[in-house]
Image (cartoon, rainbow over all chains, first blue to last red; front, side, top):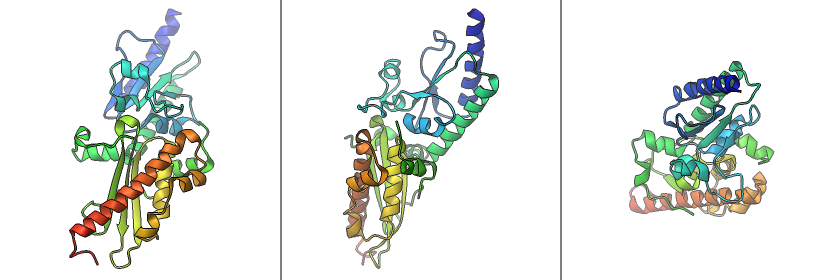
Length: 144
Length: 134
């Protein structure tokens, strides 16, 4: 069990490093030390979680804090309770590793995640505004 | 979430992604939704000032696959329509075309709002620039 935990934590850290070193404004959710070894939860600013899943769901099983798939529009209350803003809670993705995952699989998921985030940001009006130097909080959003 | 084939197609091959400079003559811009709600759409039209026909349309969307598909479809439908015809596009048309399930109807509502906001912005700018408008 301790060996398996260490193995999973190594793979998880590998995935985390690959993603965070290649994607700007990606934020780790949860405590850096007190965390499960197989779990990785990251919020990607300016992209919505469900759209990220849609880009990867044929290839691997991930989940999103976005409740877009349920009957409410509330983002993950867990991620929000960990301190993420409502915007970032809508943008959270949970990666869970298991007993039989390999290093190759982790590298591949990391690469594909980076590609999907880049593609979605190219079509994100929020990313465009942020790159133009607009403070998103300064915009008067008309919430439904 | 099971997506219709059309939603998947628009998600994988979104039509007319991009932006026009907001101050270009004939351009109208709509920005609707809110980041904390998980959906924001920017939709732009470029109107031929001689004919009143929408010559081009572009969008950028932050949101789920259905939101991306709804706005992508809206830009397809807007091209070639007059400003008056564009105002008649209804969210229910989008729901039917994309076979959106009940939990995704708000995506089509937001797309209709985006069309209306772009048309309103175009009209406001035309009224403010009588020298450019015909």
